[in-house]
Length: 133
Image (cartoon, rainbow, N blue to C red; front, side, top):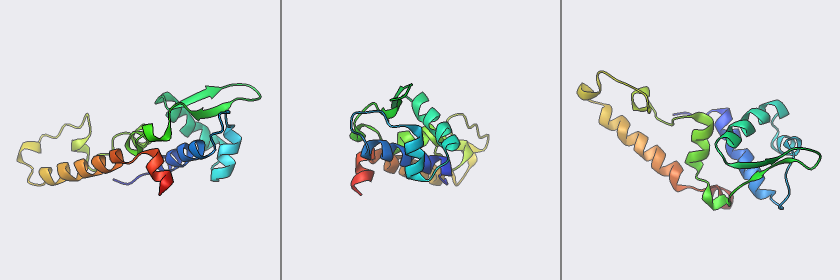
C-alpha cells in the first residue's frame, strides 16, 4: 500500500483546519497557501472530505471550511480511506475484490495479516495524535 499525494494532502488539510480553528470558517485560499497546494487540487480534496461528512462549510465572504468534530474524533484511517479508498495492500483483500485463488493461495494469510496491521495502526491514531507528534 502506498499513500498517494491525495491522501497525504487530505491529512495535511485536516491538520491545518484543526490547528487554525478559531471558531470561524477558513477560506480554501488560506488552506491551500499554507500547505503549498494549488487551490484547484485543494478543492478536489476538500470535496472528498466534505462528502465524507468531516467538514462544515459556509459560502460567501466569510465562508470556508472547518472541522465539524474535535480532532480526537477523526481517525487517520478514516481520513485516508475517504481520500484513497480501500487501504488493502492487494486487490483480493479489497471490499469488492473477488479472488478465485483465495482458498488455495498460500500467501493469502500473510496479506490478510498485513492488511489488518495497516488498518489497526491507522485506525488507532487520531488527528489529535498526529498533531501532538
